[in-house]
Each structure stands twice: as structure tokens, then as C-alpha cells.
Image 1: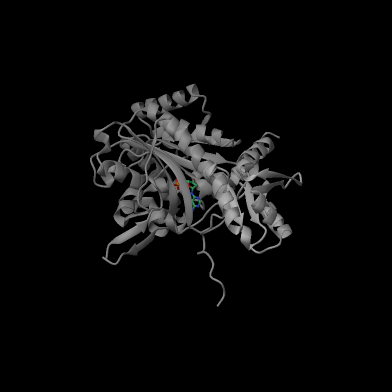
Image 2: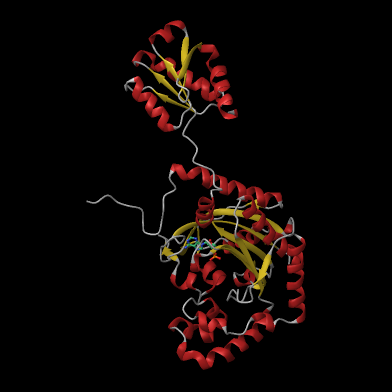
Length: 425
Ligand code: AMP
């Protein structure tokens, strides 16, 4: 039997990637918490209906990409394809809005979409995101977009382009829908199959089509359908972003084809990501979503970033931290009789906060030293027969190739001093 591999479209997070992974999540949590967002964690699977209603039947995500299964009780469940619907459900189910309004929450975790795997596109991928739930105001839209912007800055990413647009309110979108129908109906025979189907259901979704891009470029833009109050709302958002020093481009073709989206929509693009995968993250205001999933009307806005794509760009630009070595010190016993004293010394070092691995194997010392080097250790503490007899240990600097004998009671001080000196160097 050939060895079993990871399922298609998934990837393992191996130890060497852990440093950058943790760094990114830490930077995101810090940026969000600096703005008053608190962590939230919701189930990886939800009732299928939450996404059917919350993301929308007729979207690619719901129609083609969901991992849906029946559990042993016959319930239809789905691995979450995105985070917003679950977070909104959790906040409303727990009545968090009774305590404070708006609720500000940040999250991180795996998402699942049956997508065609390619660079930057996976079937299990990860997102970090925030949601600001319970109020609608241009200031909150600015806040959410700015948190994302500050996060990207803190990651040290250059070359990010922020695109913003307004989808207006329901009346604006009805007007826009008519304008799109008038434009697309005479062109129906030039549309792809998907788009012909979408035309009567929701013509806004035609603007997402990757195949009919030339037709899209000549289509009417939603900006021309915005009423006075929506236009004023959008102007306030753009003014707020400018005042915050967040450089945003107006992209009138950026839309989200779902009825519960309203007003602000935005995406952060990066040129080093190609084509359809050029989006690092995006978000928008979803004032109709709560009602769509059965709760009282509640406004909200949020964003989500793809972690793999961010790390791809951070890796290319050299802003992600290098992998951390496994340990700073390897304690080596020279023979079976020294195994226990060596193990005890390793415990004392760990108790002092020194990352320590014990090598009590029966390998020869030169093999142990080479192995310690591969682990990234800076020092070896060697415990042989003489050392045990004299209550001492040898501290060897692997880089400098020097060593010094210390009484056992002085080993921790000697090790921490050598590590600190190395760090300062
Ligand atoms: P969306 O929820 O579709 O707006 O996606 C938000 C972000 O998640 C995108 O900008 C990507 O960075 C990331 N993303 C979405 N789908 C995938 C995928 N299949 N693989 C990797 N990242 C993804």
C-alpha cells in the first residue's frame, strides 16, 4: 500500500512554520485588541442552514464549495466556509448586545471550501478577522477598515492596495439591479452558463464572473444608483479614512451580490498575488444578515484575511520571522550512570526558563554535539563520570567551540549568562 498523504487541498503546519504562524496571529490579536476587540471562538461546524441563509444559496461558496454531511442523528451540518455567520450567531444567541453595543470581537481559525487547489487557494485554509456588531455609523466602518490596515502595517507588508466601494441600501440596489438587467439582457447569449442562470436571480453576481470580464467592464456602476443618504454615508467613510491616513481607492466595481450587504465593501489587494488570488482579505457591512439567520435586525461590519496568503507575501518580502530553534541547550550524559544526574540538571535549567532538551541516548559525544547543533542549540551541558563525582558539569559553547567546567550549583547562572551574552552579540 502506498503511504497515505494529506487530503487534496490541505496542508500541514510543520514545526518550521510555527514561528511565522504564531507571529501573524499575535500581531492580529494585538492590532484588534488595541481597538477594543475581544477574542471569540465558535464551532468549526454549524447547521447547514446557517450558511445557506447566511452566505446565500446561489453563491459559489454555498452551491459548490461547502463540506456538508449528516451526523449520526441525521442533522445536516457544514464545516464553516467563513467566520462571520457563526460569530454573528454566537453574539446574538448569547445576547451580548444587552451588555454593550457594539460588540467588538476578533477570531482566527480554519475555514473549509471545496475549491480548486492552487497557489494561495486551499480546501482547508485559515482566516483572522474581526466583527463589529450592533451599530451602524461611518465611524465604525472606518474603524474596521483601519484595524485591517494597521494590522497589515504591523506585519510590515508593502504594496497593499485598499479598495473601497458602497453598495448603498436596498432601494439603491433595486435601482442598480434594474440598470444591470437593462444592460445584460440584450447580451444574454454572450454570457457563460452560470451568468445566464444568475441574471434573473441576482444580476449583481455577474460582476464577480471571471469569464465575462470584458462585459463587466462596460456594465453600469453602482455609484450611479446611490441615493443621497447612501452617497453621504460613503463620503463620510472616505473622509474618515483620509483623516486616518488610510489610503483607499474607490473601486466602483467591487460588489457583494447578497441582499444583506449594505453600504461599505472593501478589499485589500496585493500585486504579488496573481489574478483571482490577489485578495489578501476583505469585508463589508452586512446589516441584513441577522434577519436572514432568524434574529432581530442588527447591523454589523467585519473583515477576514487569509492567513496563508498573508504569510506568502510576508515570506516573499522577508518580514516574517525565521523559524525558532527547538531549544537553547542540550544536556548530554556520557554514559548510562550519568543519565539521572543529567536529567536532573535539565529539569533545573527548565525551571529557570531555559529551553532544554535532554540527550541521554547511547550515542557517542560527537554525534550528540552534531545533533545539538541541528536542533539549533547554542550550548551543550555535558555530564560525564568525572563531573558526577565532582558535582560539576561542562558547559560547551557550540558556536565558539569553547568549554568550561562549572560546579553543578553554578550551571544555571553560567548558562543564562552565556545565552544572554550571545543574544547581545
Ligand atoms: P472571503 O471570505 O471569500 O471574502 O475571503 C477572505 C479572504 O480569505 C480572501 O481574501 C483570501 O485571502 C482568503 N481565502 C478565501 N478563500 C480561500 C482559499 N480557498 N484558500 C486560501 N485562502 C482563501
